[in-house]
Length: 358
Ligand SMILES: NC(=O)c1ccc[n+]([C@@H]2O[C@H](COP(=O)([O-])OP(=O)(O)OC[C@H]3O[C@@H](n4cnc5c(N)ncnc54)[C@H](O)[C@@H]3O)[C@@H](O)[C@H]2O)c1
Image 1 (cartoon, rainbow, N blue to C red):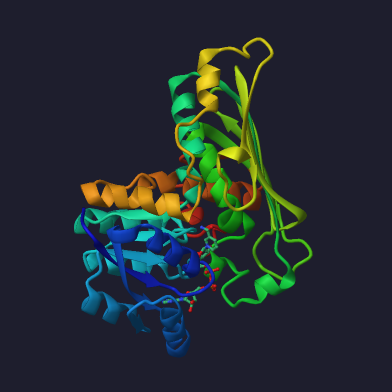
Image 2 (cartoon, rainbow, N blue to C red):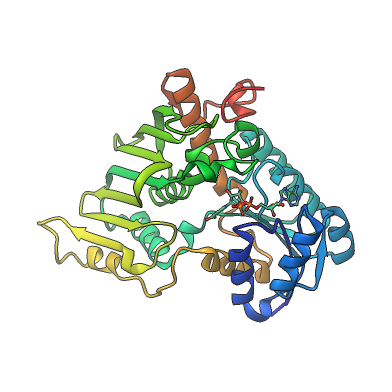
């Protein structure tokens, strides 16, 4: 087993969760440095978490530390620049969502991966839990029959103070509103579980009760290749918060009801009346592992792949699923027109920005 030298860029709210996950990985990781914008605060963060060295210049950190893994927990706008610099310094990257600002930026990241031979993984941790992995395999095997109807609700609450942080609330710095920042976890899980065969999306977005530029409510209707339908809602104005995904198949309903992370107990699989004893449905209920969908399981999965030198599962190509869908949802809402899968190409302004503006 190799011990990988890791460094963090960004030392704000979510960085603490990443430090805990890196510690959880034990001898697989030695956390050597952290980079922040403010010298005193970054040093205080490093002292609190026993991280040997603090930097305010990420290029200096990359040159001096030569990390194997860079974990990026800054706001989204600088992600592309930080990822490319880390890849070019020889590191693999684990980057927080939203991974980058646009499909154009995603293409640039893929080009950087190709020329450096290093890999990027996105922190879309809802995929990494035992039940999600197990259900994915069962759906793919056909055990639950055809997918017919999806309900994907991210109903969160963010008060006015949340949006006071400088980078939140604008298209340029946050890259989108509640869909890109909050709903992305459940939308990603949903599209990955059903193998992403969506064909068309129609949507409306709104900014309600907060003084921000981006949307804090979105409602979308999605049509799938087999005729299945789905309803996607993302909100940051819902006082009783929950994340709820419900997938109705021919033989069973699969549901997860949680908030920011889940374990097996948050899932439910209900067979149709006619198939309560179907062995395939029973198998789908019982994963043989219990790890939740969280930052620890996402990191451990990435490290397993690093140990083997293999592309991590939540790769750039996989991240494209949710980013391409998100771009289509925004385009549908802003143009008030249905948007077809794969229709956002380099001749389209929505390829360059989620709101289609230069
Ligand atoms: N996966 C999840 O569950 C989850 C949860 C919360 C936040 N996030 C994501 O994590 C990211 C950070 O969110 P947060 O709430 O921790 O933000 P935050 O504002 O609390 O912290 C951001 C940190 O990044 C630093 N920073 C900003 N630009 C930088 C740069 N160019 N170089 C170095 N450091 C820089 C800031 O100084 C600050 O320390 C966002 O993309 C957010 O969407 C993910």
